[in-house]
Length: 126
Image (cartoon, rainbow, N blue to C red; front, top):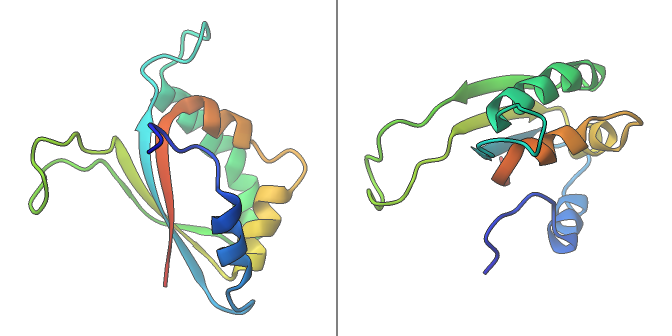
């Protein structure tokens, strides 16, 4: 099993591509930030904030909306010895086409997201 997940698998992209084109798409993001990012002097959390600021115009182009963003605080059901994620984020898209168009746009700052994170999960919800 991998220690961290920062890029989608080919299988996951194929599953996403098989979904109907007109189906709304909600993406649940589990985020675990790097403590410090290389020699930038920035924390992963600060760099992720920078990513979000730079990504917002791309979100706007496809009419994506941040539905929810928060820091998990208490494990109510589940293994209490496990570390909680640093933040969770839910983003709503009109369709898979919107999501795929956004992440494929020239200048989309995915490289900043990847640098900011130690680990992540991106889960399609319907």
